[in-house]
Length: 552
Image (cartoon, rainbow, N blue to C red; front, side, top):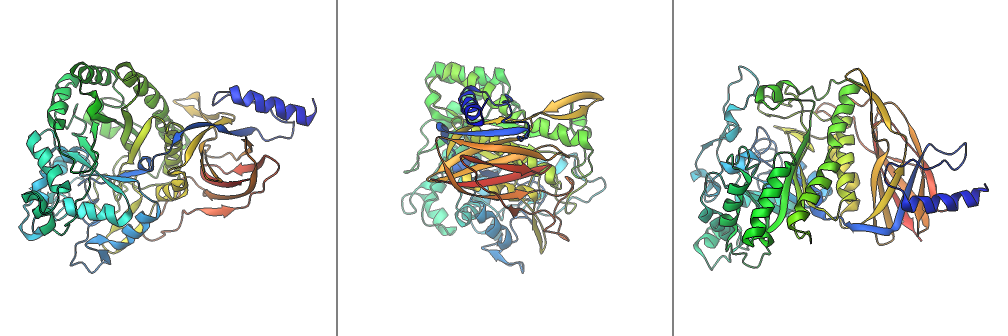
């Protein structure tokens, strides 16, 4: 078959192919992988809120990590660590969730307003967490919260970095009245209400315009141990007649445990039966990747593995766990459609990321403050690409968490600071925000590894594409820990005129940044050349790459 005829055949076949179908090679010398970008098949707009983040009063995240205080000798912006604020602004965070997590359903928002020196000190939810280092003396703001960082301080963080605030409201231990009073404090005009005047006295005369509100957190567990029917009753009570003061309020309901189908079906059915489904802007979904099994807390903790020391099987198992996000989105979307066939309610993945065993914290009080390697960078790329591919379903996502906690973007302690490999992925992927996601077909060999002594596979090259004006952004992860993958990239219904690429990769997937070596992992530009309707590119092992193509 002549080459031109073969190419026409493949282009036609690609339009019908499903992701993961291996297309025929162009020739014996062709790359083993092919990426077809179908500009005429839009998926949806990639909401900037998909590139969201999460701040909880947990370990060293807020105090010492984010908040150093206005009297600190560490450079700060109104008490916020300046290095972190400046770096955070660069990745264009769409939204930041606060104050939890499980902490949220213990938190009384009134403790965090008024003069800081008069705010009460409260026991933190995480005081008795089993992950604290044995024998460590638990003291200080990480375990007895002084409430120096409250509503106004969080709102200032969002304003500094250009993000929208997303508040998680206390449904377990505060009455519904306090929910709408918090909305009043945030959003009412300063001269209209007593709480608006209090906000002005706290330093923010203009309304905060808070739109996003989570009605409880993990209400099946730490948020109250509800069943879906009882939670639906509480959701209706908390969301009835909440004033917006000009802000178009978006209420997010608590989803079930890691995609529990019974919770979603019963919660949606009750709201639909009572005619209140239109109050539900989003349904939360939480999903973490870890090497753990069993439902009891002891197994859940003991089953996790180290964040830095891992073998090939453990490397792939974490990525396999992250890859479960796609079927979770698909299954939850189908369940939501049973009661909401028009899909007015979207998915909000407001907790996601990797979760490892304790032991790699940057300092002892950084509870759950695990290190972050190239494995986590690949996980972040895999997950963000999944969200992009489902931009019609996912309206917001929040990686857990921002600094010194789980899959954080930053590590910070006293005057020390560095970014993590995950930070660089968010920087690379920020070009997708607000773009039009288009269908992208990856025809690539699967990645093979050994799992529990038996052969196992996971997807090979993986990614997503979006278009903004004349710019096409393609992001690709290569999950193979030791194999380079070369791919032909073909653009359909468009002509690329030029291309540029940046790759995040290292010689060792265990590589990570530390206070002593903060630039061990960082992205580097690589040379690419357009040929006809596409290009050929090599993707290093355990890598994340962004290609930017200018279309004619």
